[in-house]
Length: 355
Image (cartoon, rainbow, N blue to C red; front, side, top):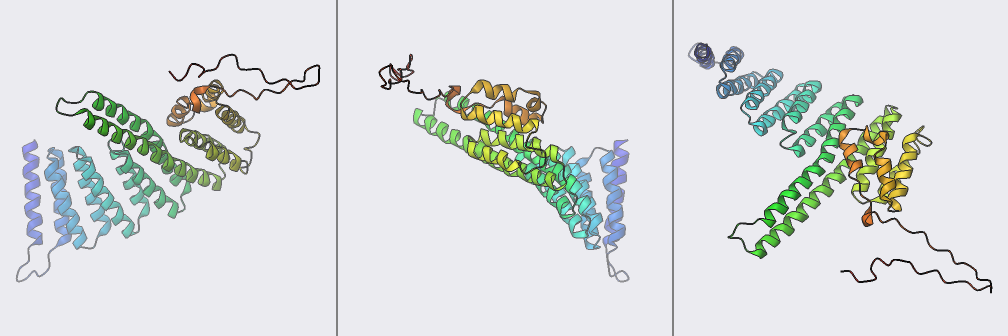
């Protein structure tokens, strides 16, 4: 069966080459007929599981359509070639061809098809190259936004935001591998080489994590603006929670507080359950009260958010190791009318030195 399909594909290729030939009575190649034969050859090779040959046939079909100025059909052929590369597990190359197809769709005036192709490419590459997937989802959102399809645009922005937040955990995973590589060096590496490599990789992971959080905060803000524009206010509240969690993981309490303060302009936010929880969260974080922060982050309001944001809440740690700030002692008046000095603390954490 496979051999029969391969022979069928080769026959279609031979016919396509014949249509492209010119002669004394045929001055112009028949690109339309050649493209049709290349397409039939691609289908035959695909059915025979000969994906490399199917990919080549699709690319030839695309070139024939381009020469015939049929951009939409050329884009379809490039997209099919990308799918063949996907079957061969060559995902980066597949994404490149699908991106090329999407640009041709836009040039042809079919932005919806272009957006669907970009989203498909993002799904293909998401697990092996999240950064590229974020870029593709953002491009898709821009296409939908230009077409004033805001609901589809904000959905793709949400995917990008969650990937950026998820990248933080991947960065921590990279950090763990860095520590292992540094602590278990090969015998040929000196201690100085190990130390310098560890320091460099450690700072690179930390920088990458902070950079992703910065991008995530901006992406969530775009989502929030669109939800506000389409008057989906309850979702705006949820995006405010996500924003605050991201800012606190960036150790930027000021930005988190400003985010809540600006959200008071959203109808219904002030007095909502989300607003009360965020105020309690910020209070606990500012007072370095880990118990209060954990209580808020373990509440159903936070735990039943999107999984990536729920994990952000569960992993949130207050600065200072969770040692709650003690209120300033008020001076007490003595019977003689003098003010007594505040009592010394019973336990001085650093009384015996740092060690």
